Amino acid sequence: MAERDVTGDALGDAVGPAGSVVLEDRAGVAVLHVEGALDLALAPKLRQLAERAARSRPALLVIDLTDVTFLASAGMAELVRAHRGQAATAPLRVVARGRITLRPLELTRLTDELAIYPSLSEALAR
Image (cartoon, rainbow, N blue to C red; front, side):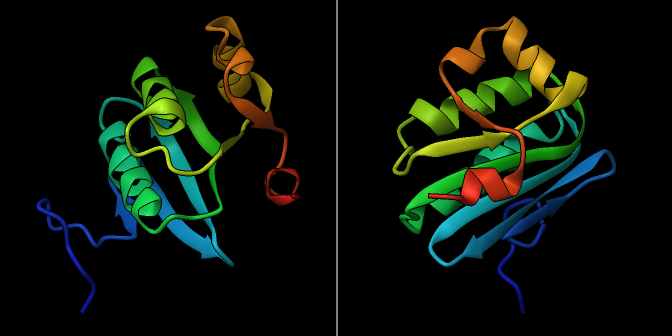
């Protein structure tokens, strides 16, 4: 039986009506795949799984926003928290491209702070 959090969701993934976050281990690299609207509803799940990933002390944490359909300020706040928060134990790389994800990061100047990559394969390259 899979571990469950206080909401009853299986740890390692978080699926809701508007989106999902899935944690994958790729040979010591933690990859969080986010799908759907990364807003106030999904941001806490991203935080929870980013903190869980950090506890495993990965060499690198990658947050893949390729399948995000909306990036709200709550989602961007979680990216910053993963980058410089107390649980930030590994370098963070963010996969973002296009108008939906990259443009909000540019407008808020988070592209100056976060390591942004156009594809997951480029973010995983060491």
